[in-house]
Length: 189
Image 1 (tube, rainbow, N blue to C red):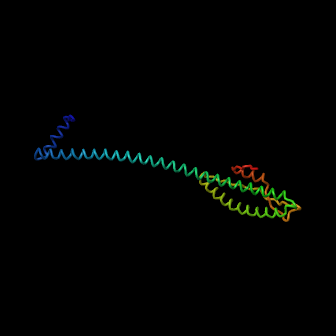
Image 2 (image 1 turned 90 degrees about the horizontal axis):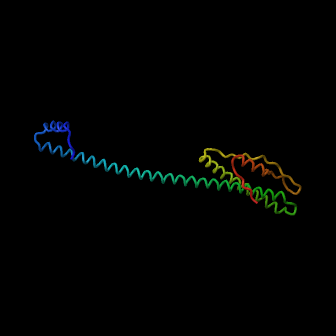
Image 3 (image 1 turned 90 degrees about the vertical axis):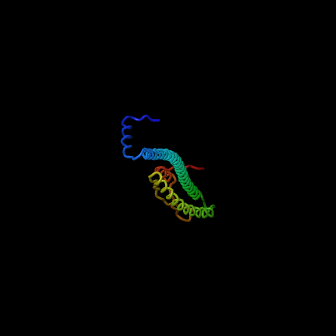
């Protein structure tokens, strides 16, 4: 039980004068005590609820961070895969061009098939270019920078055995342009 100070006793004495009986005074004191106890209990419950909500909020925040990291990893993997596919398509186009260069009169029919394949690869290259642009846009969103490759000018390749003049690009200049733009070129056999 708490010991009352002299000032508190005077305050109680002064408060008692406003009541007609001791029972009325005690009833009001009991109501005040009950209200204070209820307020203190509510404060304790509120504090427990606040602590639980804070803990749940921290847990949700941690789970959100983990999910955001995983999304970034997946998006980064997708961009790398698209770039690798584009590099592979470039490599395949270079192989087709080299096969065309080494073809002779005995390989005339094979050359026509190769030309058809080049047209398909150019079509795929257009599709791949669009995919690369989409990937570039996504990279720009993720890294807030652009990835631009300026390809060298084409030159015409003409040979006595060829039916037509074929525009080509030098592979070395294409690789240099990709590297200058911050990309990588995988050399294959």
